[in-house]
Structure formats: C-alpha cells, structure tokens
Image (cartoon, rainbow, N blue to C red):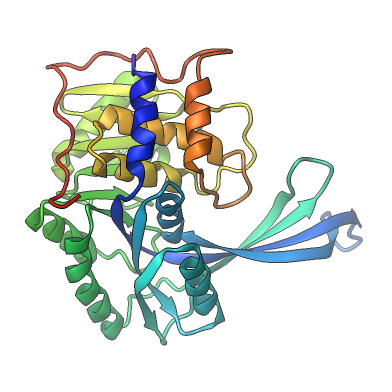
Length: 359
C-alpha cells in the first residue's frame, strides 16, 4: 500500500520545479448560452448568448498545471500572428508562464477550439457542440529553426522536458527525437503525452498514452490487468523507455515498468463533470513529481489524485497545492482507498529518478 504521509510530503516539493513544456498550443473558446426552446429548423436547442471566455489549451494546459502547483514552466511552441495567438500569449504571461519560447509563424493561424455550452438547471453548463479551427500543415522552415534554437537553451535551464503532442504540426518525428537527444545529453528527464502517435517517442524516460491509442498502436484489445501489463512491456521494449503510463478513463491508470506493474484506481468516479484536460494534469503532475525526486509509484498516484480533482471543474482546469493536500488527506475515510493496496513489485524497488544538477 502506498504511504499517505509520503504523498502528502511530496506535494510541497513540487514547488520550484523547472519544467519545459514542448508541444501544440491552442486557445479554447467557450460560448455560453441559455437554452430557451427547440429550433423549428432542426431538433436542436436555441441558445440565447450569455457570455464568452477563452482559456489556454493544448500544451499550454500542462504548463498551467505545473504553475498551479508551484512549478516554473517554460513553454516552447508556435502560434500564428493573429488575435488568438496574442490572446493566448497574453493570458499565459499574466498567469506567470514563461512564454519566451513561443515562436510566431505568420503563415499559419493559431488553433482555436470553440465549445458551445448550454446553461440548464445543472451545476455547470452542458457542452452541445464543438468546432475546431486547426492547421495541421508542417511548420514554416523559419518557425522550425526558431523552435530548434529555443530547445537548445531551454533544456539546459530545466529539470525535465514534457512533450505534449496534440497532432497540430509542432511535435514532428524530428522534434521528438531532438528532445530525447538533448535530454539524454544533459541528464534531464523527458516525458511525453501522446495523442495517437506513440512510436516517435523513443528514448524518453516515461511515455503516457490513453487506452484507445495504445490499442491502435499494438493492434490488440486491452481488458484484464495482464493485457495492460503486457502492452506496457511491449511499448517499453519498442521505445526503450523507463516506464509507460496507460490512462484508462474511469478505471484510473496503469503504470508499467520492467520491474513490475501497478494499477491505480480512479480517485473520483462519481463527482465528474468535465474530463477535458485530465490527461494534461496527469502528465504535468507526474513530470513535476519525478523532477522533485519522487519514485514512479508515488508520482503516478499523486497525478491520479490531481486528475480526480480537475474533472470536477469546467474545461481546462488546474489544482492547487491546498486542494490536492486536502483531497489526499481525506482518502479512505469514507470508502475505498484509491492509494492501495497494490500488487508488489517484482525484483524489489528501484531508486527514485535522479534529479538534474542544480535542481
């Protein structure tokens, strides 16, 4: 069983961790309206506009999660020379995310994901439609050069590099390989949150994938715990990574290492409003905890708890140290304890991940 006091003591150690977040950013736009009647033109509700707001999304969300827990994120990405790109950088800068690593490519538009929400009698508005404006073309060569230049100095300034691949053109095979090489040369942690393409993240420390993407990659259905264990071991072998995390929606996540296997049950299966960005929270907290010197079991368990909190909130959300501490302290009081018990490792317990020099 994982030790609750150990998890509680890990939370304050997340503060000050320097994490580079590399990947595709977007601006999440929310249009909220009040449902008044059904349309005569189609079987859809008619919404009277109430308000509009925007939130940084994509790779910007794990950066915001790192910041919310006291870390120091440095974001490396590309935006267009447009209003959405300026809004995105302004919001991130005001929150405290270092945006000096964001390049501007005038040849493309900033990705905008528009969600239409209907206000009803429930706790939060309900999403009724989503429209994405996304340019998936390869980056302009000048933008590629800007990213390469930024990566060179960014990796030397941080304790870990987190790659968030939203299939928006930033995380190419070449960039994924460059991050792995730079991290290895400087003894930095490298983690990846994949969205469909797993095999380009060879040589990383930890790779996270959701269950459907893992199944497509391996051409196999995952059902029982043994199938998840075997899938993780196959990915470890193919990618040459230290560990694989497979997220399983309401079933929590599976952590696979050569030394053993661990299923972490979902910390919150009942009070769920919006799962948007839960995977971003998992990879952010996992990376931040490893940078703080945590072992993988503890890092995965803490990341799972944080995800259980953000699904209670609307849209791309973050969790504060106070919220995470209170949630972790309350576990097991009124029901099953999602911290354990877990199967024991085979071959003993490996040492925590090494921290970067100066971290």
